[in-house]
Image 1 (cartoon, rainbow, N blue to C red):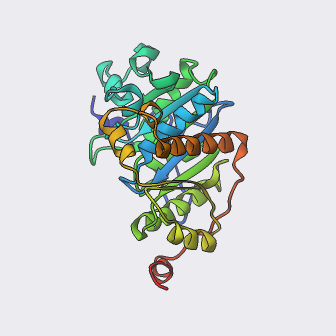
Image 2: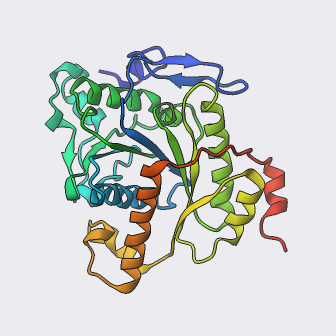
Length: 304
């Protein structure tokens, strides 16, 4: 079956929506397909900023707190759950192709994999380059999980989403999320991308329950630029993770940080993840942020 033929807005319960922003044509998922009672977080940030590392370790932190966790990778690269499962698992799109997109033929074990400390892992994948919409993929993934009753016993769902937000398709997880978290570094490009993500979340918040939860500073010894931006737009930094070599090595070893040999600096990072998970479970205060104009960001950052 031709993926492009099925991945358009009008297919498989996915519709188009023009009310999410001026001139927008956003993807709307089937309103009947809802995740349920789990707390749902969508993790965004500039490409390469460490969203998958952050998401996977946050998933483990939730599991260490006794929560039943499901992580959904939403990137064609499908490596979100790599350190949890120790492999690149087949994507939902991969397995749908094997049954000619007859979803009723799939079993949970065809697309759900158990990772470290019981974290359940799914890789939604994405359409081939230039052929379809990521919103279809997210919609089909949640629909499959719902049909197989895999969301009923889940406490926390984490969507790990493709880098920069440029289309309604990859903003689709925001239609399911309670809180959106933005991973950034203390540099101009990461903060510039964060500003665009704020705008996307603001657009989705008009029609959905999603709200900004806060900022996760990653690979950053200092946060002065992040703090300066947060003060202007109305954001807060929820956690800060330094640029440590052990974090890089954990990816190479296909391991989460909670599986690496103990050291004072690693223990500190683990404690920060556990603190962040506890704070999110207790309830992240919804934030109302106003994105800046591009020119204003250039004027704000990098100058004394």
